[in-house]
Length: 244
Image (cartoon, rainbow, N blue to C red):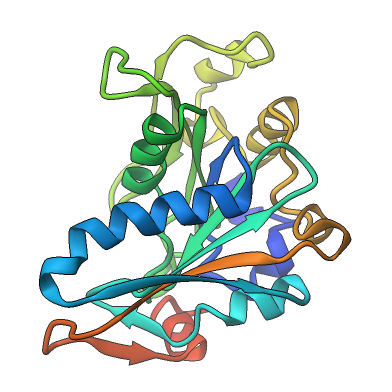
């Protein structure tokens, strides 16, 4: 059940930043520099520069490089090596990381698989808390039935009844019988997400999965003139908004 998620990354202290994460099956520095080149081309006409620098330290020190969080424009993006072939991605949007479009585009650009992983406990009660979601999206380096999505599975609540959905070709390790569970939220659970990710070579909810052997993370940072409404927030302010 999503409301009883135990074992979230860093005990969920960095939610909403880490409630949604992206992954690319490639080298972290390579991913960061390719992302910076893409964003730099888009933002140069506005006078915004995009730079890349390494960030050393613990996982929480690396995540701290994202601060302050910003809205409406995201200014900092972090690419972290892991104990696998995958690079992790988070950004400094004050409502959390938005991984879908970035990972989908980068998977095609780099010719690798990409992924979006969402794990949010359902804590919403009487106007406070978060709507729960467990989502796995896998992108490929080529066009498929829908953009470059290879596989999508989700059980989520977006302010109404729980919904479940899937598309694409199932992986051999999937527990297809669970998709028929009576309760919609039980059709794709946090435990199932973790198991599926292990089959794909990831353990994203474990702290020691990141920054192996002192390897640095790579921060992509945008500087220049942003929209007048651009606002900065502390992590505490973002967590208060989510009633965390």
